[in-house]
Length: 120
Image (tube, rainbow, N blue to C red; front, side):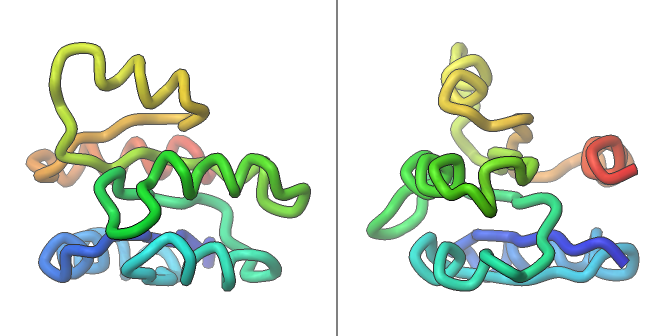
């Protein structure tokens, strides 16, 4: 079973992602960036769903740390965010995310297809 890390500080959003993906993937859950960065090396994570608005260290800063780490730099990173203004997609892709997906997750099948497209 492939492993996905989810970095999300909202308990309801975390619960939803686990409910959607938990039967198909091993989910490692983190409610902040430093905790994720401490445990990701050696975890076998192949994809990370990363909230942008995290306390202390935002998702962009977490991603920059991931991209600078030789052991983590190639992990697929998807911005899972409520930031959905015009230009946000391009902004986050330019920051180094592989994909951008907005919350709330409305189309479960689309969300699952996006995840699967990176893990096949």
